[in-house]
Amino acid sequence: MEEQFDSAPDAEVSREEFTSVMTALEPDQIISTKEHHHCPRRQLTRTEMLLFWALRIYLVFMVGVVVYQIWTSVR
Amino acid sequence: MYTCANVSASGIFALRFSHCIDGMKEPKTAPEPRGLVVPRSNVLNDQRMSGDDVVITHEDIDRAHDRERVSATRARRGFRPRLRLFWLLIGPGILVMLGENDGPSMLSYAATGARFGIGFFVPFIVLTFAMACVVQEMTVRLGAATHRGHAELIFDRFGPFWGWFSMIDLMVGNFLTLVTEFIAIRAGLGFFGVRPAVAVCGALLVLSIALMTHRYWTWERIILGVAMFNLVFVPVALLTHPHWGAVGRALVTWRPLPGGLTQETVLILLADIGATVTPWMLFFQQSAIADKGLTTRDIRFGRVDTVLGAALATVAALATMLATAPLFMHHMSAANFEAAEFAQALQPFIGQWGAALFALGIFEAGMVAAVTISTSSAYAFGEVARRPHSLNLPFKQGRAFYLVLLLEAAAAAGLVLIPGIPLVYIVLLVNVIAVLAMPPALLFMYMLVNDREIMGVLVSPRWANVLALGVVTVLIGAGLLFGVSVIAPNALAFIGGR
Image 1 (tube, rainbow over the protein chains, first blue to last red):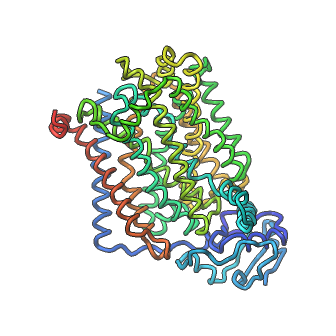
Image 2: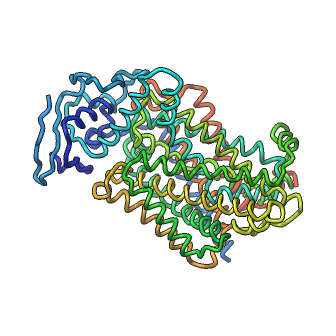
Image 3: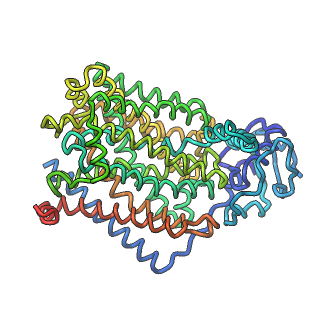
């Protein structure tokens, strides 16, 4: 089980530390819980899909603008 | 309820825990109630019902110790415990705001004061920090409600493409910014005669020493202490004996942009916006809040932390602008000034000590930002690549996290040692790129903070959405204006009426 975790468990976890962690942290703050449970993928609506495509176009345009600016400056 | 001493194949001792979080008895030393002030119901918090085993890590233990101190303090009544609670919970907000008052930002403010005076820009800078507050408040809520970083949420909710895109976008922007931070460090210390290689290597050493604590809390306090030196620009501004009546009038009346809307004024406007609201801030504050272990009970303090940070940063930014305003008054050209040259040019007005303080301020700005920006990259990398990502991790467990952080900083530092880099142009360009990258980051932020599935009842209220949309509109508008200024400079003259 331990090998599944990216964050290695502490080498010497005392009972006090265990109690401390379980009481002081919220359940989804514990690393092993976070590593096992990820947020489910969100289902995008049509409007959101459209927005994301607009975002892609905006980025391509703006990257072009910045590259052009650098190119003209270098020349 | 739990079984101890499960020895894994690697011989590591761990505690295994099943089906017990809800059933566990409240120990005497646990002052913080499990129930939250704001009832939470989201997909993340509901995971405790799944009954999977829990392995306790070093990171969990450190974070739990921090949370116990918070809980114990919260349980006490009175002014002093309240003050202590405030001390325990502040950090990410102040760090992110003072961190954003970085080398290029301070240089942008200095260039603004020297070229355009204060008439238009005093209220403009106050407005940009207000925009930063609106945006960063969303990260406080997201971080406290989900206990996850921004990159991780984008990856999980919108898929690997946007997750990797956001991370790479952030890392490229951060790398360019880090280059300018080390230029600021080199220029700031250059005023004192420190050789560039010594200045840059010294800064890398400081960055590494702060990491050696392997403790988020200690790291945060060290960097907060250094970040307070950002206010060194206040005495510098006072040395120039500013006309406070004129400053007050500028703040209230908001005079027109000097020289109208030209390519130069648009660039400086964008640079000042980029000096206040940038993508790394979103990623850093949310990850830092998750790393610090803040919960929904702490959101109020998180907000105060952010507003306090913005107030301190505004004071430092305005002070920098006021400090260089004498150059504008005496019609001195500051078009190609670098950090040390600003200090030298100011020497006749503020003396040797004032100039030294200015140079020291530029060094500090670069130093703090180098630390926070490289940390935000490392957080984002860890979140997307699913590697451990916390300043609480020992080096062995957080190897990837620390290596990304140190390698990015070292590569940027190495580039700075190449002679002949046009500082002012790079500084402006970096801030402009930050403005361009901001809309996507903000869009994800806006969608996440309105995502009831992960935010529960903490989704943005209508007023917050109106404000956030206003900020997004301003930033996209600024980006498009920049595009126009590059492609058709004459169109700007038309827009500006000149």
